[in-house]
Image 1 (cartoon, rainbow, N blue to C red):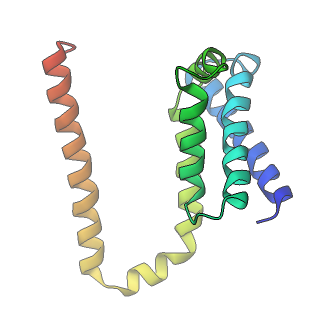
Image 2 (cartoon, rainbow, N blue to C red):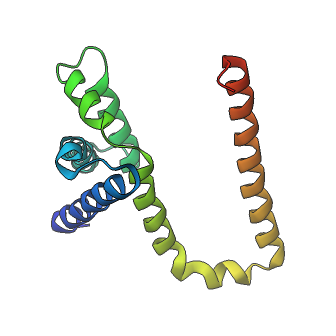
Image 3 (cartoon, one colour):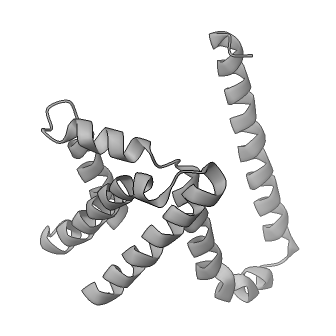
Length: 148
């Protein structure tokens, strides 16, 4: 992918995150701007590093490593990164991720349906099991900590 395309995607993502953060959580644009910029810079560095380092790791691995390094206790920019990213409610970026995922698989629905009704049934059971399992773990942890 060309760097101009990445830049456009980063700008669209940043606007989407800001909008979701504002609409869903009443966090103003100027208040969330430093956090959005931090996240986008980490993502851009991850893309750039994936092009330079010859290892065949996915971009998300490089982004995760850079994010961890930026927020680790020995990092000089740790406080700023944590404070800025703390203003972003992380369900706001997840809204954009869900939208991207829906768009990316929309052209593959026909091939998915060709695999038959059994595959759809397996998918439903996997999603339901994942949700119920996550809810049970969360419930147990919240009970143990006394939150509920």
